[in-house]
Length: 214
Image (cartoon, rainbow, N blue to C red; front, top):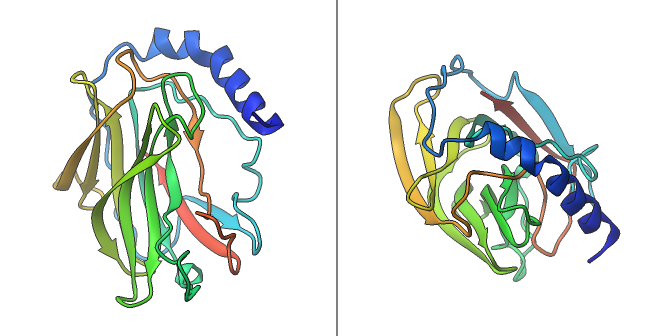
């Protein structure tokens, strides 16, 4: 375990008791939808610099998640277009989500993943999980174009699964839902995970992603 992993795990454990005390329920709560946005405006801009994996100022950033899930809008601009022309093109990058089960991201976590499909000229989006394993599982959800805003929710359910949802922006109209297995049975105990490029390859140019947590 490297220094960063030890730091993240120690920080997660420190916050666990507070998280368990506050996140006493599993089901998703009622959240007021954010206003519909057009184009990549609003929210927080995350930049993954060329040659890096982590978005700027997030490598040692630990933000405990004090609720049973996360809901957010995201937007990618044209900086996410890339073509490695090799076996790394299908690798899934990470958008946003959380660690879980008082463990590291590569052991238990739930995130939305993405990659650029050069043949279709689309951003493909996935439910992306680690469940008591360094091996990930991904489930295709949908595809969008650069400049298109999309709204996600990831929550922990009482039945022991994660629930991934996509909404019509700014509404509670559900466009799709997908359940995925989870690695523990107690309430969510983890921290936010921020944009990360890779896979094996680092960002081929500065990659810009807007995220508006609701």
